[in-house]
Amino acid sequence: MDIRVGNGFDVHRFEEGDHVVLCGVPVPHDKRLAGHSDADVSMHALTDAIYGALSAGDIGQHFPPSDPQWKGANSRIFLQHAVALAAERGFRVTQADVTLICERPKIGPHAPAMREALAGIMGLDPARISVKATTSERLGFTGREEGIAAMATATLVAEGGLPPPHRRRVLSFFGVGFLRPAPGTWGSLAALPFAWILNALGGPLFLAICAIVLFWIGYRLTRAEIEGSDDHDPSWIVLDEVVGQWIAVLPVAIGAAHVGLDPLRLWPGIVAAFLLFRLFDVWKPWHVGRADGRGDAFGLMADDVWAGVFAAVIGILLAGVSHGVMAL
Ligand SMILES: Nc1ccn([C@@H]2O[C@H](COP(=O)(O)O)[C@@H](O)[C@H]2O)c(=O)n1
Ligand SMILES: C[C@@]1(CO)OP(=O)(O)OP(=O)(O)OC[C@H]1O
Image 1: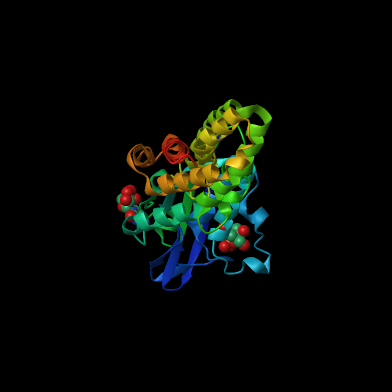
Image 2 (image 1 turned 135 degrees about the horizontal axis):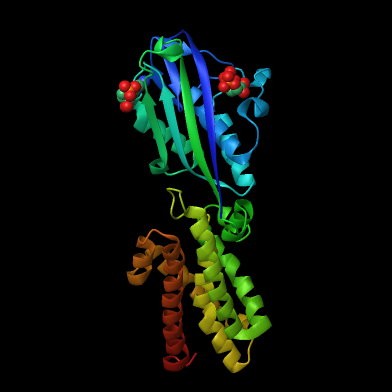
């Protein structure tokens, strides 16, 4: 694990105006901050803290004040760029601490909204963001209310393993999870041809082993993906549906192997495994709901395992009824 810490500092002077923008939140004031952009001094300090942790220069190098396209720009553009650059290099911002230095306006009442705003921009849990303020005891330029200074610290963590873009490719089953509507259903559908290929390659036991390995991969990658995020069950993660669907279809593969047929010949069984798995995954009865309720990476993967197991058991019962009782 690679942990980096960066700091940032910025100052903007006051000019005539009626509000300031701090951490993305408009705060009523009898002056405004002057700058080439929206002069969000706190967001600039935080952006620089992230660039600092990455040893990636500073905000002025990425967004030169001489460039007219940044005139009046919303500073979230700068912060988002820094977070994206971190992700590109395999880092996730896990914590940020911002201190504003000014006599006025009072920051305390706006701090919760500021934390929320930064969290939204950075895709981070607000609990991992701090916004605080101090006066400078009327000393210096901040004490004379000529401007606002801000300092910030950011912690970045690279987990090792797959960098985030590749991780997302795997977790979304190579983009299937981004199909809309019903990404889980698309994930289940996409799982079926791969189940057929794996079964053709090594039989039902090989398919079962692949499901176990994929569960472990999905768990590790999901844990890395949702750690520090407030979304603990992103809908685009469908690797769990792939594992569940493979489990659901296992009895069909075993049955086909038993009678020496291609599983495709048992297509009603495959359709039943698909529909039953979707039913249990959406309905979330008993263990499925309990696993889902854990709200962690293990639960995200395990609820589909249970849905797959339920679908497999009901599938076996239905097969028993149709072949045994009804002699179809
Ligand atoms: N612009 C500011 C400045 C300060 N605060 C809050 O007031 C507390 C006391 O400030 P000191 O400079 O005397 O330490 C400070 O801890 C902040 O909570 C503020 O909200 N806005
Ligand atoms: C943000 C940029 C963007 O043009 O301009 P300013 O709003 O003036 O902010 P500052 O922190 O002085 O400098 C960085 C610039 O890159």
